[in-house]
Length: 575
Ligand code: ADP
Image 1: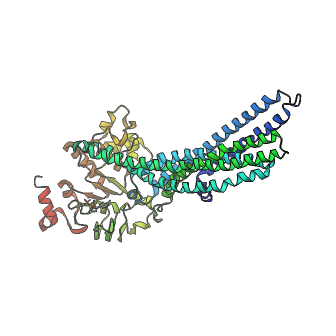
Image 2 (image 1 turned 135 degrees about the vertical axis):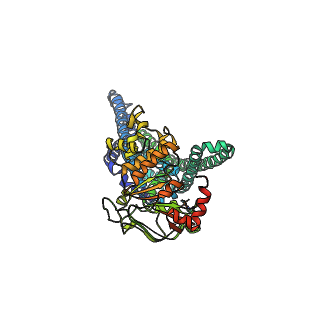
């Protein structure tokens, strides 16, 4: 039980805002608990004197009983409401911290956890577990107070007999602890099974076209069934573990009770016990049974809920937030330098980049070419620090990236890639993403990206909501929206990952013009597959298997007849 208390205490920072509610709930629970022994206490005078004519005023009986239950009902309501209010504050605080952590955590977090497990934690587990925790804690508090009040009354009536009942407690505590440990282990396994189940759904929802096309429905269903069945079995085991607590506790209680009744009857046979006293004692004792039973029932949900909430708290404490330095100029010149950079995705894999050195002047346009898997994306991902090199260093304007303030560093880059990510918000908000919406600038950016005509033809124009991940836009429109976003950001360095690949040739020319405009005066890195991009680049850098193989202008590299000339021969034969 001590460890349970310690674990509850760990929640402290999250329930701080709900302190007032907890205090009110505790007060109300205390009042409700104190009304419990009042009922057997009423029995005693009623039985001892009620049957003697004139000793008790009749009107007092309903007043006392109804008054008592009203008070108890009111106190119960207040306690429940106040505690749930406090819990709501706690859920809100925990959720916001969890999401805040996702916003700031170092990028490795996203490779360690699947999206579905993070969704599970932030959306479902925190809420479900807290609801469970609150109702269980409320029961725990109310019933232990009730129990204490009843025991105090019993002690007052007959201390010797009460000690019999007290013997119960260590035994009950032992049962609760043993079963609690098992419940905790099963809960952890259940969480993992739950995540895997959600992951199967996530994959299949995202990839439904491929699944149908390949007729993979049956294998995917089997996969789902297997995960679901695992979860079912774990849940059942957990229920079995928690359900053994109740009968065990009850048997213990029955042993104590029968002993007490025997002794009490024996005592009253010796005389010195009134009927009222005996009935009050037995009533109070019987009344200890429901709270005692609840106490046994409540351990499992508390353990389950705590285990779930702790997972979220561990995530928040896991891994540091991204750390940067203090170098934070408003705008970089855009000179990039890689010095002997080696990058690895894991010890057992070949290095994605191997001792790669490269210098890019401010304002230069560099086309990165190379076979797929050569390391072009990895190189580009180093720049905004989405990846960290294993050795070597990357510098922007002569300052090593770790010395840059992370946000200031990322202000220097605009990215247009093949997979355009759009948010469920207005077009204007998607263009301005993260910055204040300046409507004129948004229109200008859309115009430069040759998207304004289309947007103006929409009913709400730039205030149109574009739905989950821009479902309402065509591939080409999405790409142009991404370009508009880059134009709006007006960063000194551009990263283009074949930005115009999804465009038809007419809008491609238009967008290419917009991009040329955009690239002027900016450092630009293009992961290039198209000949026109490469021909216009100041320099072509060919990468193979993580190494820089050759660099020069398009014409120079063609003349050299190396990797680039070979790639060129394959890719642009028809161009
Ligand atoms: P390119 O962009 O030239 O196609 P990448 O930079 O994507 O190449 O990949 C370089 C190498 O790194 C490849 O061997 C690829 O398998 C590996 N790689 C890329 N991303 C990851 C990742 N997230 N985890 C593990 N390996 C990766």
